[in-house]
Image 1 (spheres, rainbow, N blue to C red):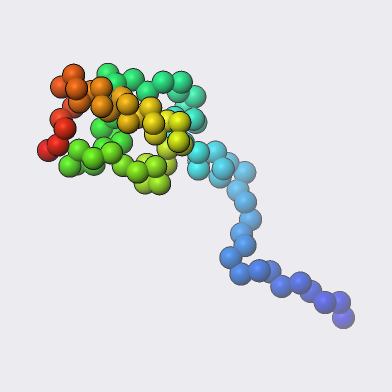
Image 2 (image 1 turned 60 degrees about the vertical axis):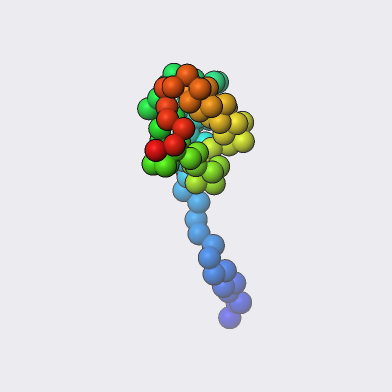
Length: 85
């Protein structure tokens, strides 16, 4: 009788499109710049209190998270978004 290797606990089969969904939403849509005038996008990145979500929570990459911070600051400065609510 041949020895059968046991399946390791926690290993799963990879789905074909899984990695694409795990990427940054701006990288998936191939966005070059996050615009400060695009308020619907910026409001998705901000809590109800007006604080920016972390990279871990929003799922953004480093490049787009930095662009989001700058866009949010510009929108706040031009009174398009509130500093705090």
